[in-house]
Image 1 (cartoon, one colour):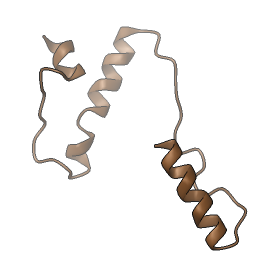
Image 2 (cartoon, helix red, strand yellow):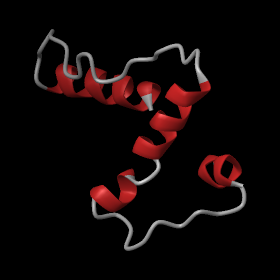
Image 3 (cartoon, one colour):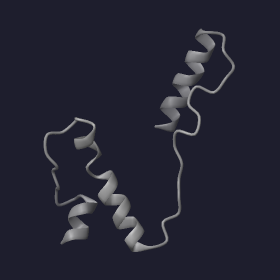
Image 4 (tube, one colour):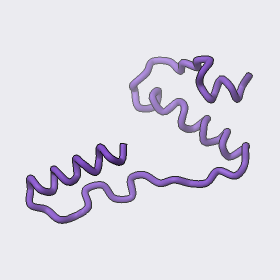
Length: 71
């Protein structure tokens, strides 16, 4: 994703003769040291397609991390 957005930002800035950041502080990474924190992250991230209106129901396949945590 970062590579795609970087390429787009370079193209956008060149096409408009700009020299500023197009996407700033969009992504970050954190170190997850506790299982309980990881579980909270998974529970928050997994239903994002529902919240964004991209899916009608939450599908938990056997290969998903959420399925592995609950089984």
